[in-house]
Amino acid sequence: MADDATNRVLIAGLAMARALHRRGMPGLVLERRADVAEAGLAINLPGNAVQALAQLGLADALGQVGSPIRRREYRTERGRLLFAVDEGAFWGARAHPRCVRRGDLLRLLADGLPADAVRRGRAVAAIRQSAGDVSVELADGAVERGGWLVGADGVHSAVRRSVFGEAAPSPALLGQASWRFMARNPGLDAWTLWAGAGGLFLLIPVDRDEVYGWASVGGAGAAGRDLAAVRRVFDRFPQPVQDTLDRILLRPDAIHHSPLEEVRVAHWTEGRVLLMGDAAHATAPVWAQGAALALEDALVLAGLLAGGGDRDGIGPAYEALRRPRVGHIQAMTDRLSRTATMPDWARNLLLPLIGPRSYRATYAKLRVPVSA
Image 1 (tube, rainbow, N blue to C red):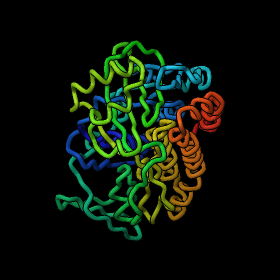
Image 2 (image 1 turned 120 degrees about the horizontal axis):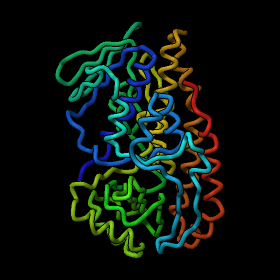
Image 3 (image 1 turned 90 degrees about the vertical axis):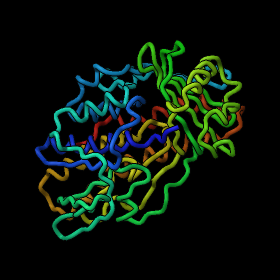
């Protein structure tokens, strides 16, 4: 099994490069890995992510890939519907949520960038700041210099560790481990989550033939990387889950494992070094905000960098603009994550009442696009 990390980092870096490029500013993405092994996975883009991509000039192109998500369904492990959300009606036509293949999203973000905007196989070894620039020493001995360094390198950010000295990411309330995969569509036409004792299972249509899947387990069963070893957690789940598990477990190399970790740090900026995306504020995927918040970060940060104002004020301004929105997502993530630890009877009793309210309370604030 592979770790699901590389593409999330690339999305943030490419979004930053694209946001700068659209403002006529140069940007260089240094990517640690030499290749991208996970482009076959997909990603769920809620309405605020779709709005951000439109601000990056990709509204029309996005409409040509993946599948719109018109409805969310939250179900018990036996398949009973707890509540549903009409996402199309909530977000409207211009911000309709969409599930797309990650490879397609990466291609859209990179489209139009200079040929040398992304350099792969460039691991950061050391970072040094001066009054006017930042120098980055790479593992191969090369040195890159620029006016700013944006750490868009994910949950286990080398930039954060080197410059900010922050503690390791903390386990998410939602669970300890998760797996992502692509599978044959078992006949679904809606975003569908099944919740049971110790496990969550989500399937999202990417098209008529294929779904993007995510499974999570908590407790002692989450210690390993092997989804087959915890299959018993899903024994009481309905047939679409069983059929999907049967198929994907025949292809273990196509299942991508990752621990569920969150990043909550006191500062995102230090001099001319800034953090964005998961490096600054990774959250459990309750509201699908990992890529969405990174896209928004890129728009806001590029706007500040291109603004020509006080250089010393960019970091504080960035945090002032972004922390309220990120803090809202973190609070709403914690609130809904706690239901995953409840006994089945309590969760099934409460979700029909609090689920729709939580959805509206979370996303209503995100329907206002960020100021780029």
